[in-house]
Length: 212
Image (cartoon, rainbow, N blue to C red; front, side, top):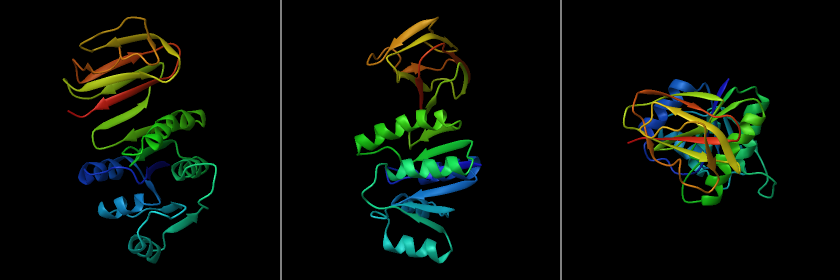
């Protein structure tokens, strides 16, 4: 199963996000107010999850009239609604989990959702966070990245340091380099080819591909 989780952050390019969800995912979990995004994209969630404090009454009534499953949680809890949705997707065997509507004006939620990518991988799945302008995911030992020549790619260390980074096909190549958390050395590199390769030996590295 490939699960798309749609939360209540910022989405404005509904056409782009709808196409990604429709093409790449076969199960949709609407997280609380994220269901309003889903409805605007003319999609239907397989499940509604959350404490239901931000979904509109009209959207909730519409989707439940279609028989959409609802898992309601209390407002006072030890995890965000998005995290609960991730746990549900993992328990149902999702091998790919896409996070949408997970960035925006709540910096705390945005940062938490980025770090959820580590949680997803620790639970033997693959996570990808997509918004109107970016796609973010974790680097493997060897990561082949497809984009377009001229695209911007940033490499952000999520651990104290990331060692053994080698880049092939970039405007600014690296060879067995170390990136330190908090430094900006890996920000705003540029693809020289439509397909490039990123190698890393040790540490957790976030790859962010930005749409020009």
